[in-house]
Amino acid sequence: MFCKLCKINTLDITQYVHKYGMTVDYTPITGLPSKYTLDGTLHDDSIGNVATYTYRLNPVRPDVAKMILQEYRNDKVFLTTYDPTDDGIKVILCKTSAAKVADPYIKYGDITYWQLSPLIFRAVEPS
Image (cartoon, rainbow, N blue to C red):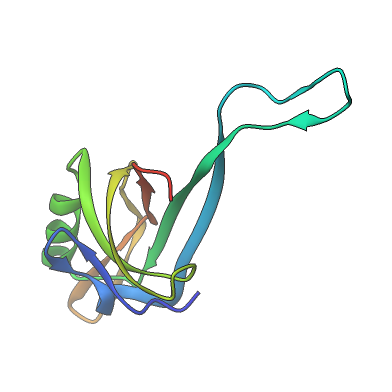
């Protein structure tokens, strides 16, 4: 999906996200296990959906990678992003996942670029 905006807290990383590097997965949250009543009706308690946002980044300079990882290492962050379900920009409280610098480093001339693993954000509140 095309990435229109991506901010981690106040750090804007939109320019570093791959052009089509954004994916959004919606996982349903259910309450009690679904059950059939005596009249044959299925009762399925659904609370809502939790969104998981994944961003693939282009190779970046080491100083930029350190800035991104510093913001991403927090347990919870505010993610400002485009949400396709609302067709608008949203600010979402998210939990972060593991992030690392993927090997190998990419070298162009005298400059070494770091390739970060995809950044994964899971919304705390169901939508």
